[in-house]
Image 1 (cartoon, rainbow, N blue to C red):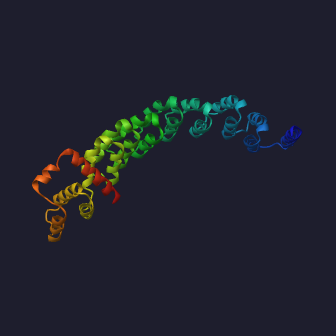
Image 2: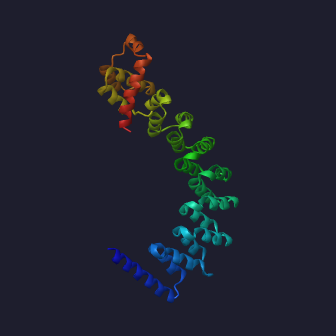
Length: 294
């Protein structure tokens, strides 16, 4: 087995010598670096020795050949690399990411490059954020920061809440930024929330459960209320009936007969059912059944 491995290595080296005799271009050498570990360092040195090597060629050397990475970086920097090339270093060559990020940050780059720094370089994250927020990111861009850069969730969430957030923005803050969830939930409940919005509040902000449940009732249709009256226990039926009558000023004769046949409406019974414990139970039951119909 060892003899076979040695033979293979000898064969590869022989092929390498033949390749050099045919004066390979930098692209050929780059393919050697990427695919033949045994020849990686030799091919990298060959690229660095050539005056026609581009920054793309040098990036290949830095990424795949640790032995000559520093030498390749020194050459790369002397050529005034573009923002795109520096971003490639940040995203693909971790040992050089911070120094590349510093160069990029000093140029006060566009938002997409700042986002790259925030995402990949923790030490420069907050400094990049200062530039980023000055460029007036959109609501969607702030949500992107909240979702993918945990270190900046509070900063991005706070900024988003100040900018007339949409319901989808508020849901993002509630789910991802726990210390802002109550504030975002209150805002959401005040701006025409959908059933899904209310369910999000109930799932992520238990402190707002009672208020969310009350608002949820407004989203239940008359047909759903009638179904609740018919199939639920009397506590739920009574609350559903009151909600139906609250929103319907003129009930049809059919509706009145329907309600009379299903719901007892004595005053003492209504008063008894208004205590908070029963009310909470009613709201919980309505939430479960109402959301199933959404």
